[in-house]
Image 1 (spheres, rainbow, N blue to C red):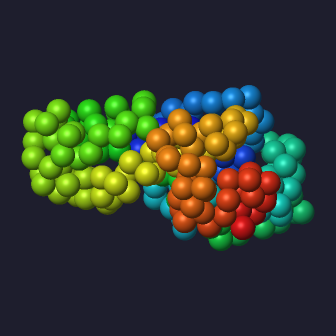
Image 2 (image 1 turned 180 degrees about the vertical axis):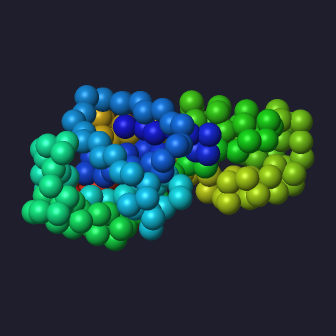
Image 3 (image 1 turned 45 degrees about the horizontal axis):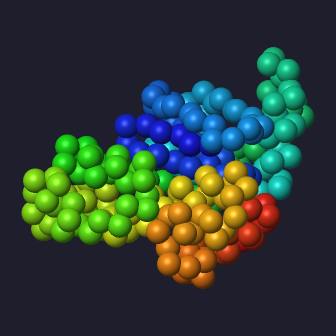
Length: 213
């Protein structure tokens, strides 16, 4: 699924979860049929949680804790065994490794046009110099704005767009070769090299290894 806020977009593949802080307006898009569980926490009992959205890898232990937690009655005994289960669950959440599956969205109007176009068509091959002609700003200005508003270079941002789109399509069952060519890579091996560099593993292992190792 894809979670979006004013600050950016987070892609959540299988066996991952997204942390959304309290009072953050967000939208959720399911790219394909899915089964999910949602946990809601009173902010005061989780003071150490991230202040921004984050995609995290769910271990097998945490997965079982979540399944047990959602089966508890609403008025579970906080001082008994059920309360201790929730305590372990919270401890596990605090240690979750964050996955680099966030796409920060710029706010500058010129960058926004570029960002939205590439989000809709990640394979667009135009260079920053070519985009500068369309945006009505110099490539130097766009370079400075991309770094200031997203913390990434234009090249890094475009690669992240392609990576997140690839994850969504691979999760849908699209073949690796088809995804690679559709996203503008010259070969399957070039795409796999990018994927491994970004996520530390191959596309095949990413979707079969529950812990994302």
